[in-house]
Length: 67
Image 1 (cartoon, helix red, strand yellow):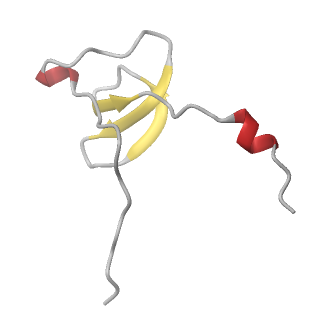
Image 2 (image 1 turned 180 degrees about the vertical axis):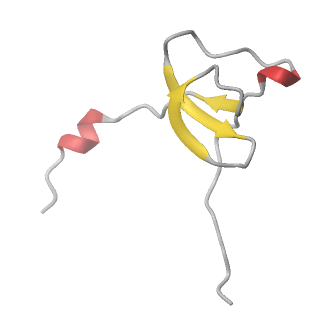
């Protein structure tokens, strides 16, 4: 049996049903389902239990050339 690992840190999902704010309307965010699956979409489906802003891109690092 292989060991399952995952990497997490930094931010935490926000849970509106527990008093956290809802995301801005018509804004794409990371969504957490009741089954623990994370996907990208818009808040409002009944299966959404948590949300997190999308990560910010670092365009300077993306443009760097690797030598």
